[in-house]
Length: 196
Image (cartoon, rainbow, N blue to C red; front, side, top):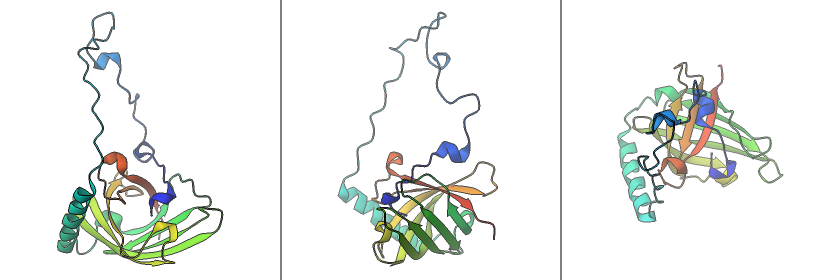
């Protein structure tokens, strides 16, 4: 599960479209009876957050590693348990990803044609709880090493989002491979639970 997969899922696909539309209208901003919007009263657009410095990313990585050692869920993250199949969009032809999580251990089987040639990978690792819905993915072994840009010893945080129905049939993992934790920097991976 690395950036070269170019997963392009949308949270709105997982959680459903907004009922009645999602956009703001003139009625939600200040204006007069004619419907004219008072642009001076509108809030200025927020500046996007700047990418954190390498030293800041390293500090967060060290803090997360220390939290992971405490492992707040020694039996595993409950909502992740089971077998999951990637169903999101990707630019990798014939891409397949099956993620199997049992307790704190996981295995992942990847295959596809990222550059025209068939590539398969088997990944083993551990999932550690950090806080709320954030987990730390710790890669123990990649066969073959480097497949889909995965390396043994990699670790990265992911946010886990469920479907709104609470049935646990779908989930979205938003992963931060380069430790830039801005929401816009995460890559989204949409999965569907596989019946066992």
